[in-house]
Amino acid sequence: MNRELLTVIQQIAGEKGIDKEVLFEALESALLSASKKTMGAADNVRMHLERATGALKVYQRKRVVEEVADPKLEISLAEAKALNPEAELDDELEQELAPKEFGRIAAQTAKQVILQRVREAEREGIYAEFIGKEGQLVRGIVHRIEKRNVIMEMGKAEAVLPEREQIPGERYNPGDRVRAYVVEVKKSSKGPQITLSRTHPGYLARLFETEIPEVQEGIVVVKAVAREPGERAKVAVASTKRDVDPIGACVGLRGTRIQVISRDLRGEKIDIVEWSYDAATFVARALSPAKVSSVTLLEAPPAAPGEEGQEPPQPAVLVTVPDNQLSLAIGKKGQNARLAAKLTGLRIDIKSESEIEADRVRLEEEMTEGRRALSELLDATPALVDKLVGGGLHSPALVVRAGAERVMELTGMDEKGTGELVAAAQDWLDRHPARPEEEAELAAPADDGGAATE
Image (tube, rainbow, N blue to C red; front, side, top):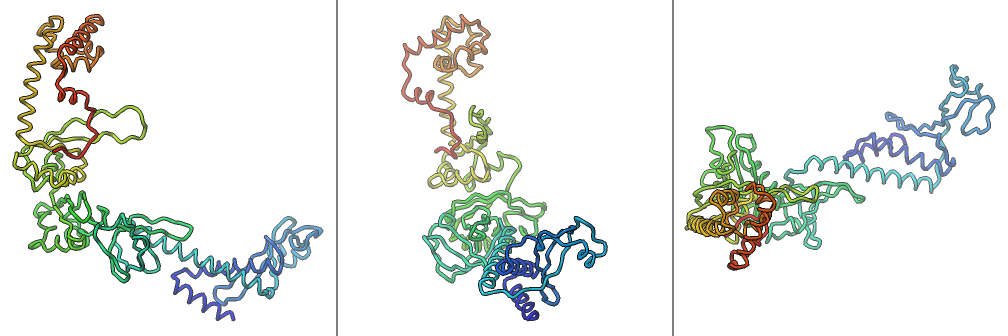
């Protein structure tokens, strides 16, 4: 019987991938629960299975006293001395008891406890295996489809590929072998929940590691990835060795390497660009295949006061492109500009050279008209006009919008003079209504950090 028990434990440990010690402890706990059905509840009883022989031993812990009031909890000093000559009053000793036969209900209890512990141990084993695979690629077999979510078998575990994490247009059938990216592994009452993705940018980065030896060896490094799954992606790469071309290594001979990756992503077009520490250079490369004339880094707008934990405003760049490159830089439905913004982490505003020239001419005209209008206010001196224009207030409308405090700060005028100047600017506006486009420009709120403008 004992040998059979050891054989069963060995078999279960091998089949379920559970440590034998976990099974011995589960069995001891189950037998203790079963014993309470026959021996009554006793917190001072423990059971021990000999790991080598399978023999069961029962021990009861008792306190040494002069007079025994409760035989289940106490032992006399004389009996204690017989067990251990060094025993003294108030010591605690363990006394071995003879194992009792278990009834049918007790045996059922033991079975339930063992099964529960085995299930828990299995779940812990699966969780421990997959928690280390977060951010890695795994392969699985499609088991079933539930409400467009794909349930995949991965050895002893089941994983979910939700609909939102599937590449648009992909179809799955039971038995299909699928490669995916482990997004999250978390514990739940039903066991580990493993969430997979084929749309995550990390999936594309891991494919590069798998298919391109130079990335696997660390010679080429994937710095950033931006994707619109199933359609287009941009990947920024850099080389750790001067004599290795990172783009050429990723594309492969006649594009063989990148074609393998693109096929895995249902034909997703992949642009590979060389990463750069210089933000302007990186933005210009990220907008390829469009040619860029210039990139100007803009100051990030000040953070709005209020909510704590709000993300800081996104840094922005103004990109100038030749007129014939504007539609290519923006891309179909703005896709090229969006991906470049995701790849670089910058807000990208794209304008053609003719738009930039038109803006420059318009600004010069506005400055000229504004200076003339400012000169009319209270017969403002050229020096006063220069101070206002130098502070960015080159029209009466901007003076009114800035307010008395800002005007006082720029001009150094006293409160009375400042108030008269702002009032005169308002009076000028009342007499010269602004054109609709000027009103819209003045009333427009600060840009919220969109990806690009056409």
